[in-house]
Amino acid sequence: MKNVNARKLAFMILMSIEENREVSDKVINDYLKKNSLDKRDENLVRKIVYGCLENKLLLNYYIEKMVSMPFAKMDQEIIYILQIGMYQILFLDKVPNSAAVNESVKIAKKVNSKTSGFVNGVLRNFIRQKDQLTISEKDLIEYLSLTYSYPKWLVNYFIDLYGQEKTEDIFKFNKKAPMLCVRTNTLKVTREELLGALIDLGMSVKKSNLTEAGLIIYDLNGHSIDQIDLFKNGYFYIQDDASILVSEILDPKEGDNILDVCAAPGGKSTHLAQLIKDKGYILSRDVSKNKLELIEENVKRLGIQSIQSEIYNGTKEDKSHQEYFDKILIDAPCSGLGIIRRKPEIKYNRSLEDIRLITKTQYRILEESSKLVREGGHLVYSTCTVGNLENSDVINKFLSKHKNFDIIKIDNKDFLQILPGDYPSDGFFICKLLKK
Image 1 (cartoon, one colour):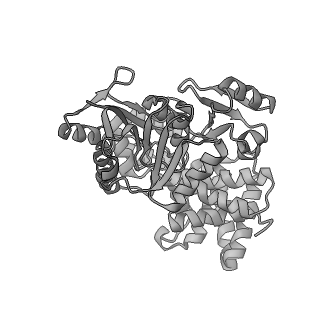
Image 2: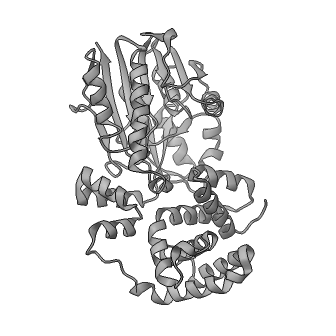
Image 3: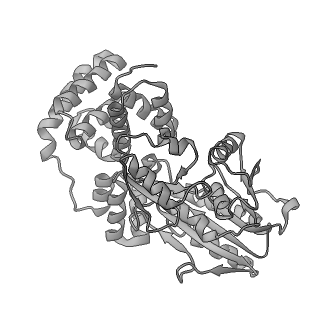
C-alpha cells in the first residue's frame, strides 16, 4: 500500500489493534513501514490512533449520547470512524472541525457508502452540542472512568492501592505523551559525548536524574531517532529510564556469569554487558525464536561479544546451571499497568483474573531462577507494573519459603516501586535479593 490517506490509515490501524488485540506500537510501526507518508502525516496517524485508544471510553460515551440506536447494535467500523472524528474535534486544535468531519465521511464512503450521511450528521451535531455534554461528578468511579477512560474495576484497583488523589495524578500523567529516553552505549561513547552529539543535531536533550546512562530527549528537531547514524552505529539503545535502572541496581561486575531470564528484546542484557565492560558471560533467554532474533539484532548493532542467546522457558527446571550464576535478572512477564501511557490498549485488555493468573507464572519463574544463583550471588526481580499482587506479594511468598534469601535494601527500602509520574518514566517495581 502506498500514499494512503493518513486518516484512513489510522482507521485501519485502530481496527487491527482492537479487533486482533494487538500491541499498538508494533501495529503502528508495521503499517507506517508499508506506506509512504510524510513526517507530518505520520505524526497525525500516531496522534489519532493513540488518542482514540487513550480516550476510548470517553469517545464511546459521547457516541452513545449522539445516536438514538443502542450502542451495542452499532457497526464496529462506524464506531471507529466516529471515534476518529470526535477525537480530532475534541483534542486536535490545529485540525479544523470541518476537516475532521469531511475526512471521516470520506472513510465512511469507502467502508460503507450508505453510512456516510449518518457519520456526517452525528459529527456535525456533536460539534454543536459538545460544550453542553458534561460528565457528572456525583459517582466518583464513573467520573474517573469516563474522564480518563479506565474500566471501573481498574479505577477501583488503583484507588484501593494509592487513594483517589494519587490515582488521578497517575491517570493525568498517563495521558501525556511519553518522553523519549535513550541509554548510552558506554562501550562506544560516554554519556557526555553522546549528549553533545545529539545536541549538535539540534535536539533538546538532558541527562537523566534517575540513571547513570540515561538521556531524556525533549525535542528531536524533526529527526527519526532510529534513522540517525548514532543509532545505526550502536551508540545508544532506546529504553525507558526506569527500565535502565533495573540493570544498574543488579550492579554486575567484570567477569560475572549472568542470566537474563526474560531477555527480549535485549535492552537489559545489552546494558548488563556494558556494565561488565563486555568482559564476562551473559546468557539471555526467552521463549521463542522471534524473541531471540530481537535480542541478536540489538547485540549486533551495539557491538557486544559477551551475550549468548538461547530459547528457554523460565518456568522450567534447569538442572545444568544449578548455582552457576553470580547475577540473575528476572524482568518478569506482567500486566503492564506501569506502561499504559505507551500502550493504552492495556487498560481494556486486562482483568483482575488475568493479574491473578500471571502471578503464578511470575512465582514459578522466580522459584526456578533462584536455584541457578550461587551462594553469595544476587537476583533482581522486576516488573513494569504497579500494585502488590505481581510485586511485593510474589516476593513475600518466595521469602517465606526460602530462608536462604535476604532482601538487599534499595534507598533504605525493601523494594523500589516507581509509579507513573514519580519521574518522567514508566511505572516499575524492582527488588534485589541475596542468596546467603
